[in-house]
Image 1: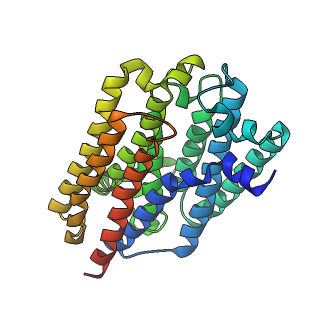
Image 2: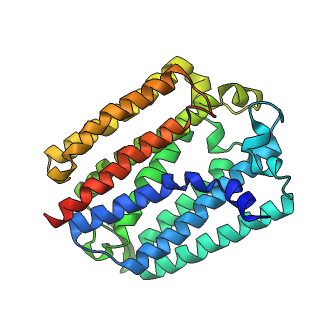
Length: 314
């Protein structure tokens, strides 16, 4: 398997969806808590990247194995296994190697942090695998948008913060005198959830846009995603609403003082996001307009990261 085929198999261009919440959480950690542990960051970066590539490769493999209709809809081009005539054994080997690397670096991270990281990591790995694998993958049911947004938006950001501040006890799990204690600072968790909402909403919309563009193909292949249940019109309305929620959340975080005043210009990004969204509403095409959801996600969240940086030095 060549490099180009590998990068297509793991869809390397889509990895921004997981790397962006990691970076946002890292910069927010230093802004709010003034702590950073670079070794932990690197361990999480490698584990996360390997696991993200694992789930994408599994998704492409399962699409290849379960496809009912194997021509049309650009199937021959957007599935790397078909396009490059990849050996199934090679694809499975790549998946296993990436998964082993993700698990190893995840274990190293746990050994440097706490049991909370191990538990959340195990749950996340399980959801990630069953998102695309099994008799009824999560991606083939109406919950795909929620699970992708929650785990890639909130859970990644939470872990990207928590691995640096385990000593601050915002969440603890420990055994004492035979009793298992669980302690959580609800206020801090709520703040982290609100900070994650722009990523949460953006990632959910990437999944939603993908499913809207693939409605005909998904129907043919018995993938009963959210747009097939609620219809195209309501799916497009939801697509718009999630962006509105993201910007209202940012406004709330600025007013409440959770985010610095340097983030105020972020609110003006609603105008290019609106223009991009209008283009998608006119035509939903995997080839021509799906990328708008990725552009909006990066515009909102990379903008947030960039504007957060000067706030660190104020």
